[in-house]
View 1 (spheres, rainbow, N blue to C red):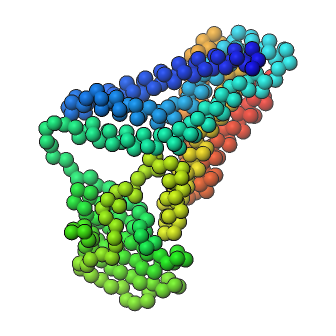
View 2: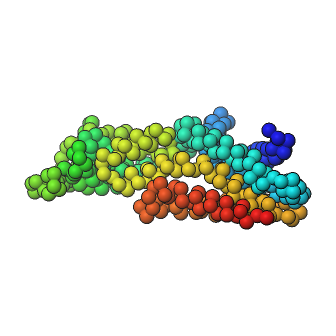
View 3: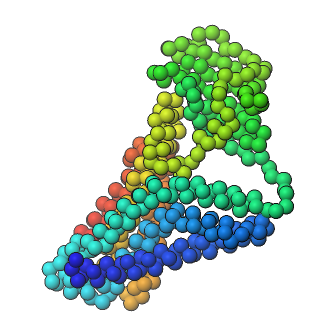
Length: 366
């Protein structure tokens, strides 16, 4: 490695770890004070608090690394520019790429690490952190009444190629409301549809109330008249635990688990749920690239800073640029989940636009 590369890398690493430590510390302090009433009321011990924040750190690290990358590279090159060192490098024949390649390589390494962390480590720790948070919130030594946990808008793929839609599921009473069950054949044609106002799980069986059963042929036409039942034993084997566990968020899944879930749902014809899962799946690949792209975006801004307040300027620009980037990405993801954009385009369009804009700005540098 050249002396110049080591010089730039040392500055970037120093600012990066300083920003990272600052952001992590501030995040923990803010989170601690926001939960202070619960901690004091429930007398949460130090051991539980330590586990909670240790399992929270990977998720926070993934969120703050883009800002740390942007600020470290922006400050480094803005300072070099302010001290006329960039002018000296350009006068010696170095191109913009040769000057900034160390920062670009650093961003690529951070992106690879974030991808690995977000797939292999973070999902399990997020799930454990959610359990620890529940323990903190329910750790009061005094018994107190707690309202039932109500899960809303469940979409579950079950056995025999069935897809369940449930408006509300009361986990305390094992009761469901607003039930729709679609059963498909091997070619994904709907062969049976069950609509029920309410379902109750008792003695190992589900009882449906005010249900209507539709039976279709391979052409989607009714084979017999709809069958109404005021009360009946539902022909399903799923237990309340199955509904709870299959509701698991993609934040708690690895890439392979999300891929498997998409494959299972693909047999159900639940296009909206599949589309949302695909957006989350592809986003796992493109999200880590934010660390690399945001460094490239910061380079043209840094090389234009010539004021004495280099640090303040760098920080202000990093916040503004990072905010715009995140807003653009959030909008594109929302459009993807709404079906306006394809999942692959939704997760990549913001990164592509920002990258192309960055390259354009770099090309306009003198």
